[in-house]
Length: 75
Image 1 (spheres, rainbow, N blue to C red):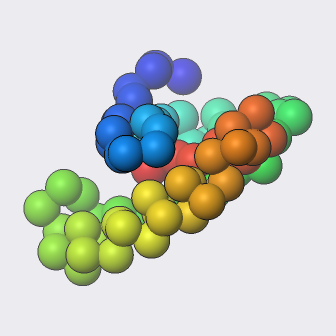
Image 2: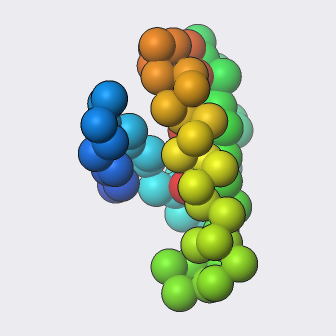
């Protein structure tokens, strides 16, 4: 998978999400992982409804930031 990372700096920590395209998503499903995955499907950077609720992904990622080795977040 190509490493495409999106980072958000907050007061407490840095949240990073790996961006996936269709091929990366299929590869993610096919390989065995030792972590749980949360995938946020978006309509793109200019898709208003996706952008307006992306704070939920950041909030959940922040809440589980102590478990970075066990839960990975993807866009």
